[in-house]
Length: 301
Image (cartoon, rainbow, N blue to C red; front, side):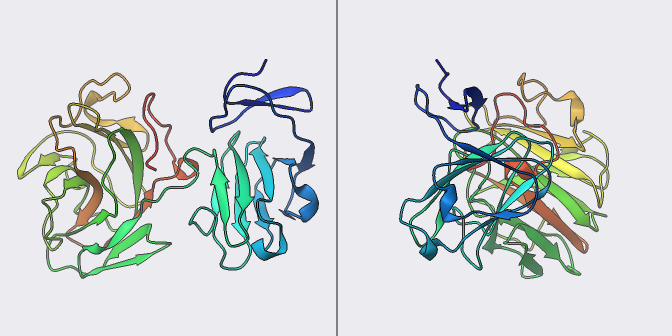
């Protein structure tokens, strides 16, 4: 009997990234290893994809309401699910499946919805309002560029981190001579200043900074480096930072030890800042992360 979170496909048990109720479901399979567009004949089938290529979705109006198709990335590449034209899938232009991720895709004749694909889609992005006037947004508001600021400037994400153990990343795309990856609370509203409220990891000296006080913490970072952030928002309000996969300050978020800071506010937003021309790209979806998610933590919804 398959476990919850498993389906039976051609007699084999496949574990899904989402959650099914206990029991079994059977789907006919079709293997694909190169660029392909879903057709009406794929209704109720599971596409077993291998390689790295785009899986096109047809126009929703061409399919019956409730049309379903399942997709699993059974290889080591990346499958990009791409709706037709300007149509969206769960509010995103595209979603990606990393190795062994799977998803159920359903249309209502106006949009596509990704069901059960944990971490494939995130509503997080940089805010169009809570940012410096020197900042410009691109890449579906996931990339922010600060251009020639006269001093420290900042920007934060749209949504506060829920009551959860969350993990996300920022890659410093360019600049980074004097920059910070951080979380700020709802009281931080002046984005033409340094984002030290509530907790930050500085690029220039690798210091950690909290509401104006700072101290030695970890390695310096710059353009090309990826800064991962783990936030435990379920109790003590702890935060850890890592550079290119290495947790700084001997931190271990999975074990809950050696956080950069603890006792943080429960209303925290992912944020970045810089005092020079710098660009960051946020990584909130599981498929976009370069580092593994710490045990017990999840991507942001």
